Image (tube, rainbow, N blue to C red; front, side, top):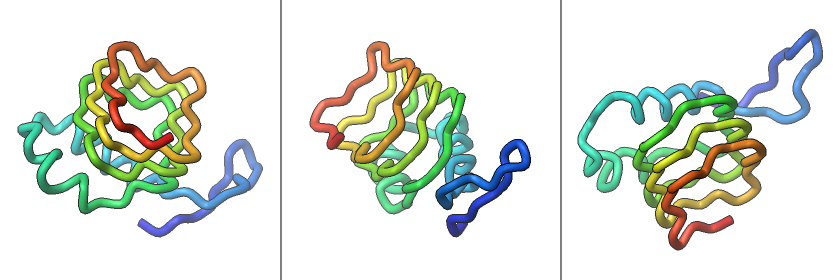
Length: 108
């Protein structure tokens, strides 16, 4: 899951990203595991920096206390997300739906 560049419409993207990490995060969020699993164990020990989650549906996900720095969240559904104490530095939140999301103590 190392960062790499790839082609979009025959043009090489400018910065290296980690699309596999984004897929892992989406899979974990949709797995219907108990929220404590995400809060106490797995996500805090994972590194999702430079992931690309364009158009992802993370509605209602538990994303507490994790590192989402430099993540592309363009048009992501973050409604009702619990993102307390998460780090969102250098994140693209353009056109993301943040309705009723909990961003208490977040680092932007």
